[in-house]
Amino acid sequence: MPRPVAVDPRFGVELRRLRQEAGLSIRELAGPALTSRSQIHDLETGRRRPTVETAAALDQALDARGRLAGMVRPAGPPPGDADRLDYVAAAPRRVDAAAIDALTDLLAAQRRLEDAVGAVAVLGPVRAQLDLVTALVGEARCALRPRLVDLASQWAQFAGWLFIADGAGQPAARWLARGLELATEADNPAMVATVLSFRAHLAEGQGQIGEMIGLSRTAGRNPTVYPGLRAYCAGQTARGLAMAGVDAAEVLPLLARLRDLAAEQSSEDLPPSGYWYTESFFRIQEGITLRHLAETDRRHADRAAELLTAGVAATPVESRGSDWHGRQVVQLARALALAGDGPAAGDALDRARAIALSTGSRPLAAQVADAVRSLSAG
Image 1: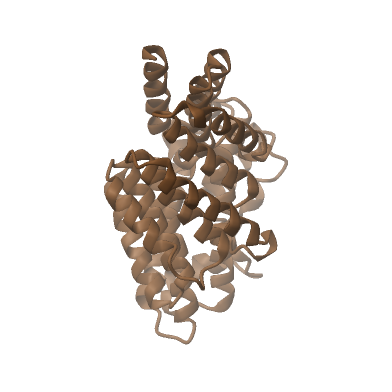
Image 2: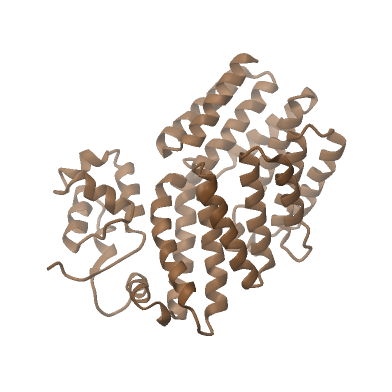
């Protein structure tokens, strides 16, 4: 009988990252690791728990220097984060502050990993971890319930975002609705506004521009919410209006509001659920809106290309492999084409296409193909 083990919940994500970093397919790794392709796939997606021996073999095959082996340990004291989460998974009513801390750290790690490798790679493990979070909330009766519910709202919002990025509208809507319920119970206005802003983003992707505008306005209405989020909501409202063909005279004041609110936001005061609201991010948001205005009024094209070029260039190197960065690069390509720089637009589309291939993002691949058709027709 296999020995009981404590497994770090990030094992599957780390295995996939190391394999891809080594340039190996699942088939190519299976032989040296003395295991099967299906087992590696199940380990990466969180459907199977590794043994100590399997983790050691994978570690050696990938020359991981103990990174994988150290994530799987025989069960027993002293309890670390992985042990603690295993314990509360078996006994949800015994959740403690340390377990909530471990889940908070795990969410932060998954967000940063998604920034590096895209949504597809982390969606499977996050779904498995959501089962644990959901079970804990369902059983929580103790004084820690408010804190746990607040954290669960952040997990649900993150899941909604991942499903949006993967083009899965129904589960995205379901998890965002659950996030809104949890944020309301937690009495967290910033998280309520965050979820509404992502629901507006989902509506944008589904072509429901009126809903996008309405939800964005509602999300940015609460003056107690931190300025970075309200800046994004102003920009998302402006983008929706530009997509709807509204005159620039109504759109540009919202972009001015975006800039004013962004200037109020200190990076040190950003919550974990809004760490991406940076100067470069807001340049990109303004540039995308101007790109939509430039579709009917080319006077906005040069400024759109300028802002998108600067924002994309300032994106941290470790985040340039994500599918969300690829979507921003597609927007850059469209702006460059409108500004008359066809060769640069083509180069940008090549970069976005490479990101789509490396992340396995079908929605990004579709956006690239659509941009190629549009630019060829233009």
